[in-house]
Length: 428
Image (cartoon, one colour):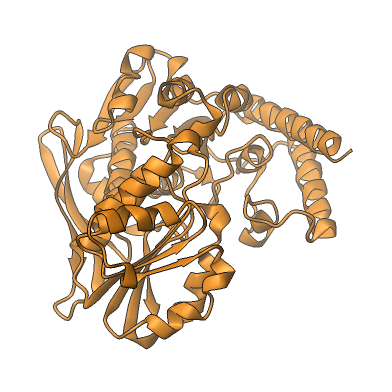
């Protein structure tokens, strides 16, 4: 009965969204990839927001149920939280039911009465947890411009595919059917992404750190104050013979530079000059839990990257921790889910990588214990490791071990709920 209701709701939302696209004919910018979709979407919104009337969801609603929401209308964060992937099932059912009735009624009314303020452009996130997912979303809203952020050697959700190559093929659907007048924005640093370039007729604009990128990131650094307080990232963007400096406060890691560069590539496709792009990026704020800096108890600093994790994003987050000054560097790491047969190897590799520069390691979850094994295999002191089965088991323990001047990274897949530990040790 439950699945029948969900299928019915999905069908209704799909039809309303399809008809809304047909009626208002907005431009559609599609963003997909194994990591960085939401941050890239928000960066694109910052770049184009001053030039055009755009709409996007502040959350990562990228499934058949959540995807139509941004097409139909804008919703409050409180409403979006009701139907987010992190919302507990079976809780607040009356509120959820009323919300979906509101969505359906408004969507139908909007199809009957033409709204003058419907956005000129939609920036949509296309998720692909399983084979065929992207095709279903493209049937709802076919993009006019496609962005592929990153895939990596061991992509998230790979356990539902035959291997990384099939994940790349699924992601390539976003740009395969773009017209020759469209643009495909691809990550030049990711081999799996660049292998897709021959599958599209669209004009290519690439972004990345490596030579040959159309929009190139140079002089990147994670910044800190003279007193050691982390500040943010700084870098330059080069495009078409020009160069502009970009500074983003309160966020860290190369992933933020990738999001900014992808957004700059989209801006360039729409004719926005590089100076305006750099100015607009000052308005970019990533979603909560994506490498954002928060003050911690006992005069500590926290890098909250608890929203999700894959081998690629875990490596990038730890590289950021390595690059910043601190009296002690603490990594609180949980399971990376949905990577199937690669789980043990991927977790051990992360542990091996962090061993030389992390002072204290805290693991959460059964798979994360392989991070501890990898660290020990590379000489990490076993007395500096704390392992817990669940986030709840670690509650109260972190407060005891923190000292002034500590820099603490929190990262795991969403289902590990490390945000609970972040809330415990952050200064409200």
